[in-house]
Image (cartoon, rainbow, N blue to C red; front, side):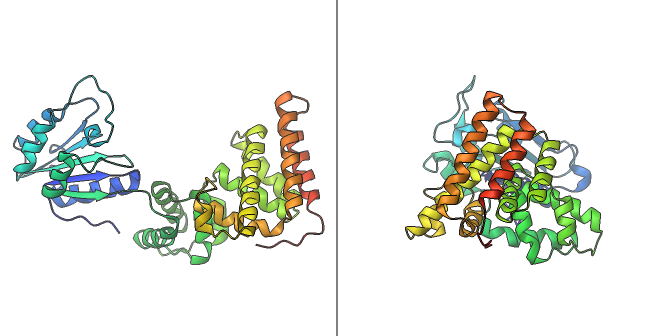
Amino acid sequence: MVNVKQSQVYLLYGEEPYLIQEHKNKIIEKTLKKEDREFNISQYDLEETPIEDVMIDAETFPFLGEGKVVIANHPVFLKAKPDKLSFEHDTDSLLEYLQNPADYTVLILIAPYEKLDERKKVFKQLKKNGEVINCQPVKEWDIDQWIQTLANDLHITVPKDIHELFTQEIGANLMALRKEMEKLSLYVGEGGVVTREIAEQLLSHSAEASGLKLVDAVMEKDLGRAIRIYKDLEKLNEEPIALTALLASQFRIISQAKVLKQKGYGQNQMKSYIKAHPYVIKMALKRERAFTQQELDQIMNQLAETDYNLKQGKMEKALAFEMLLYRLINIKQNTSVSS
């Protein structure tokens, strides 16, 4: 899914490190032979090095081979409010270079920022004389396509019906997704199939995803499963106080989703009111159907009481949290589970 046009100057900007890395690698592959890469790639941090020094390097002939790649990270002068540095960048040197880039050099500027000031002369010149590539985080609805692409690259099969596990555990972090997919490919081997059991066993578990699983265990009145999830989190050094806050956060989102749904709001409208990942809101809308508002109020009261007891040291932490899970599950009486 990563393609680059041929150019002498590139600007990669955005907050998705995987896309930045992939584009950078593709540019280097297109520019330099393997044997030339050791001596003909220069890297600079523009928070420490003036841009004019980078321009001198870009204009210098390669040491060996026919071409070179010069990479300049953190061009703060492209931001609307540049960071204060101990020196000033002479951006005129970059503007002058962009008018006539060296044909033996490929210059890559890497700006890992959400936004750049597109009104600046330097940005306009980069857009006119180079290739500007947006590397922003992908949206939730694009994750299925990325899972499929990465699976094809690694020559494994990941059935579509388990894609939600990846979204739940990893979200839209492509770098983390790539690492998890590589781990799965090593386990199943080339041509292998990743089953639900394998994915559940091997995927790294985030605290937020485990919080959703605890909510599910409460919905299903499955105390044994809830305790097991808690024990897994305990091994990851998650504290009962933090887990109580995590559960409170999840149930608060479920309660907000229920109220907003009753007022006629759709999932997209809810994003303005509920500050959470779109996937979390989507799952909250599925989970809210399993609770009455009265039950959600009781759950929030139990969570607040446990939080107070834990912080006051009135009870041993692990025991207090296990008792909390017991109480939450027993609030859920005579309520059908919907998912």
